[in-house]
Figure 1 (cartoon, helix red, strand yellow):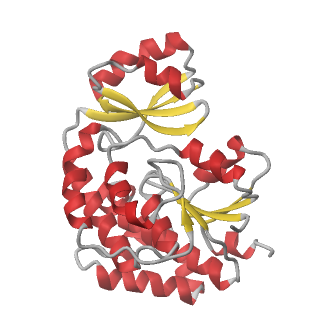
Figure 2 (cartoon, one colour):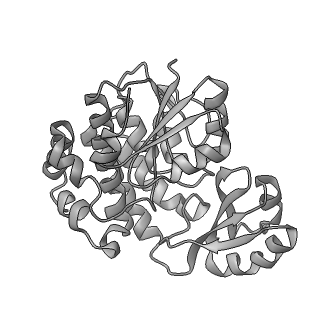
Length: 304
């Protein structure tokens, strides 16, 4: 395996204007946006990314195909500079982008999955009583022990050793907050999301996505993609099942990054707007060089 990995962020990293400077300057990136516009007839992906309001961009059904498009556009721009590798990972939604970049999913299928997944998750999260919150200064086991037995709120994202995201009913999050604070949490910060993602409340949406995934072809590839569900490298035969399970399972990002480090990864490129995964990488390991690529200036600043 190479010592380079490409990481793709999930929801929350989106911003107005994302991808525009690459569209204007890199022909490979422009082609990706143009293809996305032709594939998704029900939304204007370029207008959404380049000019979309914060309100429109944060709608789950819009965010997901938009971020897949931007992520692949950035990855193609990196390839145009001769930067390559065979290790990939994506946080939550970003796993779809990673599987596309690695060659297991066609671009057309990837953004169709993202659009369908987003619509299903939006529908499942339509009830305003759902939410998520970031818990800092507690480890995963401690947070898990604080969760109620009825699973009205669960540990959903294992991002860092001391940063766990919980997901479930808003009332349950409120109720468990004092217990988390008493256990040593520094903060329990509610997130601006539209559903209880990566919890059993997404099971019905996942069941519907599973039916859609049955029509998708998983292609052969020699590249390696880390699974959010297992924190290990995907097997081609289990990709669909893991994409299904990922919707209602804990995202094991911290474990995935530690496994990458053990495999000898020394450099990562974050392909997406923002620097969320770069920030996490720096906190997980000071031996991995973390480079964010999100526009033409950040691309041109890379010296390979």
